Image 1: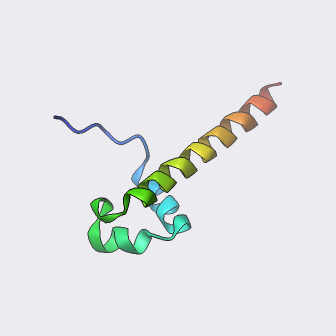
Image 2: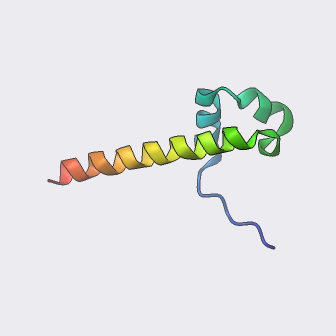
Image 3: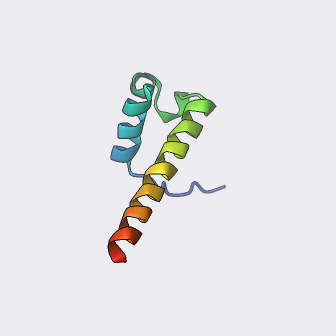
Length: 62
């Protein structure tokens, strides 16, 4: 099965990992070494940021 291209940039993922406190694991083991819970928290936080950006863009368009 071919791998899908990532939606999030590496830079954004690193920023999220640092904010959420598991970047040290990423440095030691790579992205495959993070816990499922951490990956879920990272995706949840990315969605929150995207939704906030959309709301702000919508508010400025009014």
